[in-house]
Amino acid sequence: MVRDGDCIAIFHSIHRVMKAEKVLKGQRLPILLIPAPRALHADCGLAIRYAAADREAVEGLLTAEGLVPEEIHVKQGEHYLKVG
Image (cartoon, rainbow, N blue to C red):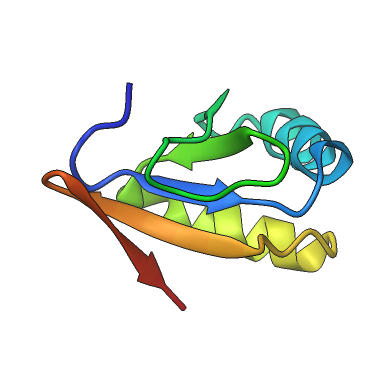
């Protein structure tokens, strides 16, 4: 479900992740709401997956909407690397 190089955005609550999904899909950004990978701790159990190529657009829009994720990780092999 998560490919190498994909970004995973983790949020504090189900409300925030659902709102983020609505905002991003409203701008037709290619994101997917997914169950949070087991290797990552997510309070609400859901996360948003997007390609590294879309990172600037996705994270810029989330910031503009006041929906900054709690954490962002990038999948590399079997690991998820936290990015700032």
